[in-house]
Length: 182
Image (cartoon, rainbow, N blue to C red):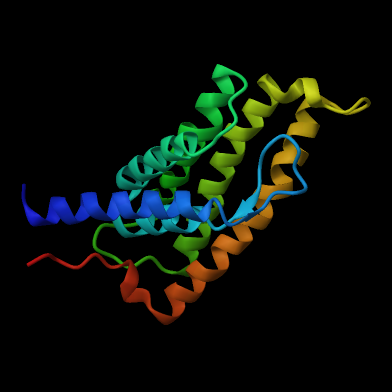
């Protein structure tokens, strides 16, 4: 195995593990049926911006499965698939805006984070409509409730993900550049 491939595999493993570790540092008291605000998306977006969408999706998929193994609550097969592997894999699609061997600029980072978070939202929203609809309060539409519930934690999480990545991009843009291996 060549060094470049090995370094990439190590980076994927570290970032997926870091995402899982950061998922335990969270604010979750407000959401009775899942969801929390954490820093878990930061490493997933970093990988997507450094290596593109394919590596980003793979890293998100691994992080989603790792999240399942670290104490996830599973109630339904649809929720199992959508809330973990699919939701986190979709974050990796933020890398579609990254051109090979170019450091992403601020607009690429903002667009990527918006896209990745929106796609993750869609996975959780669908899971909420399909499975968690039974928890919809009286007088609420299932779709509106799922949208409001999932946006209530994903919008703040998107903001706390966006801020450090913009700071890194502005002050240390070379961090996003993949260095050739020896």
